[in-house]
Image (cartoon, rainbow, N blue to C red; front, side, top):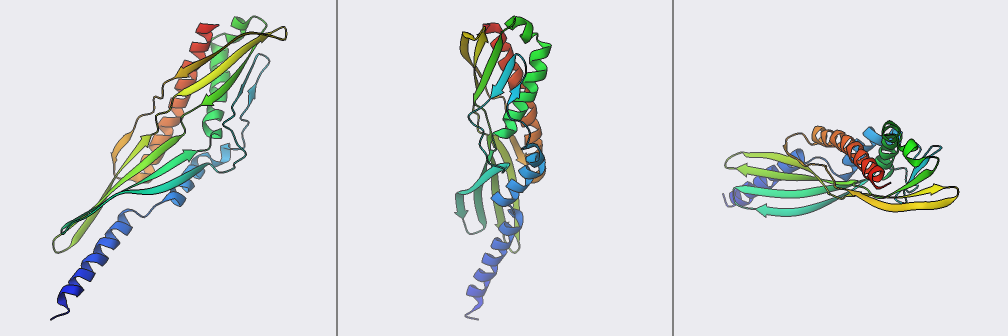
Amino acid sequence: MKFRKPLVLLQLTLTVAICFAGASCYGPRRVSKWIEEKYGTSLNSQTKARDDYFSVSSPLVTNSQFASTTVKETKHVLPLLFYWQLDYVNTCTLNPKIPINTISSTFRSYANSKGLKQKLNGGRIELTVDAVPNVFAINDRGRVVWFIYAVGWDVFSVLPENKDMVVSYRTIKDNAETKKGTVTVSDINKPLKNLTRVREGTFDYLAQYDENIKSMTKKAVDKVIEEL
């Protein structure tokens, strides 16, 4: 019987490890795969929008063909007698091409509908996206409680970085700069909390993110028009 306690401890340790492994069976590679699934085919789209009266570009754009980069970090470990807690975060940085492409296409349609071309009166405008929100974190709160049998579960949250969109512009007419300025639009992305399915929650966040980038772009266009 002298081996009973070590055996019980080993069984408990293995049970807890299995629970955490089963409940938290994803990491940076899988998150990046989800992002690639959603955005991969759009990365080859034109990131510089040009028309006869405007252009949209950004120094944020690189030659990277990856849809995202993800880094995992363990935040908190609490191993107690009958309760274990493990918190970790996958921080995902979207390829800037993703929001820049959305900004470019939204600007084209919205600027036309707002009569920006007529406002310029024969001139043109060059816009540069200097900053845009493109980072979010997936927080995973893993829990295991046991008495005789261990029970494990995870609660997920998807949290935005909260970085404003910053767009600088300059207007040109007859080969001379007539005006320049910078507009800032507050980040309107919101967290999604208390999720039980991390993949579905991540895709829900990204759908919200795409729409928010469009809305922020429209606000930027309105601010530019007000300043002209």
